[in-house]
Image 1 (cartoon, one colour):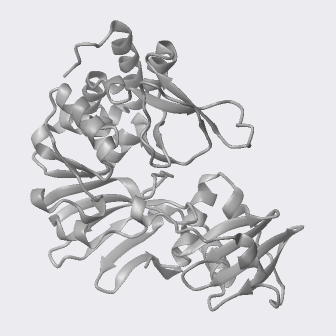
Image 2 (cartoon, one colour; image 1 turned 45 degrees about the horizontal axis):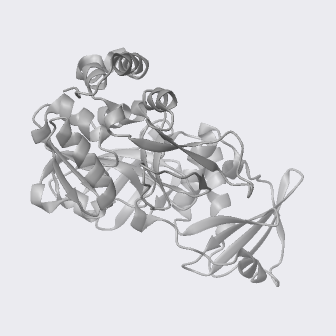
Image 3 (cartoon, rainbow, N blue to C red; image 1 turned 180 degrees about the horizontal axis):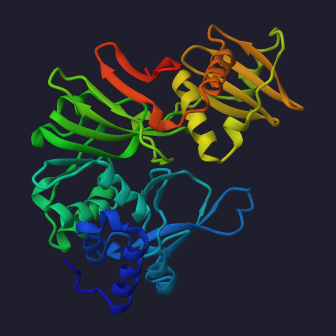
Length: 395
């Protein structure tokens, strides 16, 4: 289905996008979907980061619309990049948009290559009932409708402004999936059961409602996230007894955390450091590369440490890194000294000791990647397992 306002330039850019993001081994159906669905109908406005920060040192977000700069708008729409459509949960007025000094993205149009990867990794097939968690702009929903038919797709979105815009675009193009304003962590019982549940957000743990709403043999594709900004994806298969099991998938993919799963405020980090006044310092042979590096290896190591410390966060005070756990009242200060760390810890949980245990075990096992791990979900909890490492409980 194509829109009546589709221009020759938009169609050409869309064809170029499809050639760039659709791999030959998955071209069946998806190339046509990308070439057909007009992404510009789902992104009437978005923010792009300016080259220079704001006077306060934050990201300066520039609004981009067809009215303000039609060439920049259309080029960005059909570039393989994510487009931020909302900051701090505030719905923009795209008729009169204003720049934004800082702020955290709370909704976006995910880069098309990742959308396709998401749908492909879900192991979809004709005739399946699909639940998408997080409609967002509706672009990914439209691709699924184009590929498998609107009758196969249900999509829920917690933000009614986001869903209203997505529904307008979808229905205006002739797509008719089941849409609902709902908290995706509870799935969507009226349309259950599903053969596939695909989450376009990350969660700290897999919601029980998703398990209950998936047919035996059905699958759940979800990105596991957390408060250390580590991410790991898994494709779980739900069994007859309601338990589930599946491997972590290779590569590094990140999605915004579901809003109820986002980190709580921890207050003034100086107050937390004051708890360390009587703590005896120790040294560690580890560094903070797992936290500061942007390599794929570091991202996964961060996910493992996050899995061992699921309620900890990181803060920086006067250049010093601290791990803070608001649920237990524990804190660790990590101060680099040459090729070592000077560590002070306080509270009932020795946060750094747990992190170092994971680092040691992971190194001893040869730094296995995500595909060497499995996630199991059963009555005892949600457990990340590897033959050579201690089991990590995500709850």
